Image (cartoon, rainbow, N blue to C red):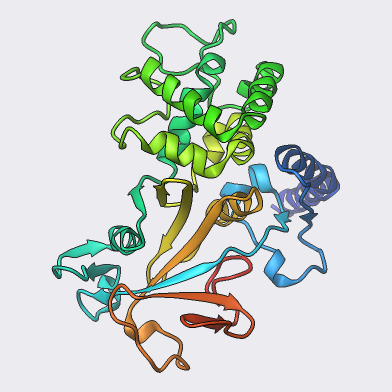
Length: 340
């Protein structure tokens, strides 16, 4: 028994040394991936770094495959606070709110959509559905390239390797050529390309493409983002579709000349690693991105004596307040995107 315990300790120690030795190389690999996907390059900060806490993020085991022990120096995303009325005062029911118009119970995402609608935004709660639809439409020829061994049935809506890193490896040259051509388009040409693809492939089964959104939403979202940011998002999806197709913001919003993505969090909710990373990545690429915090009256900070009416918006910013409705914060939602 003692011999078995000693052998276990030796093997465990050896495995730990191998993991420690491999960590710097893995972090360099992550850095190369991020710098290849975004311009200008962003800095990868190791777990043992002396960087400020706001620029570091502890990741769970599910994210170590891509993120390892590293985190990314991404811009702070603005947090917009919507004041809602909870259905009940018990903690377990505070994510169910009453509509400001007809006292209809609804979730925090529907409540946020209604409030954004008062500012002229149309939108859907799709968790990146419109973006993934655009990926499938604009990269249709890449997805259905005749790569040996990836299509075994005429009924497939995607190649067998779409959700593996081999998808990008097997088509790297073609993917990069398509993304570069998209990035060089004018906004008007991008809109025409999206409309052409939507009409050409209408009704077809394509992985990630959903047809239930308003017909003009695909064009307005693509043009509102711009060609270069859209190509940057597509690059992440192409490199690891299975991983990066999750964590996209809850709400996709659009209006003529603009698009916005909003991650909605109710009382007690916090951002996952991928959600935090996607918000920062979209912001860094120049996309209008927000974290929407829906709060009940009792959850407001103690120094906020004036409680806004249902649906009223407040914008938080680091530093002193700079105008009406702007509330200074202590980075409770900023930095790594977690509640302080």
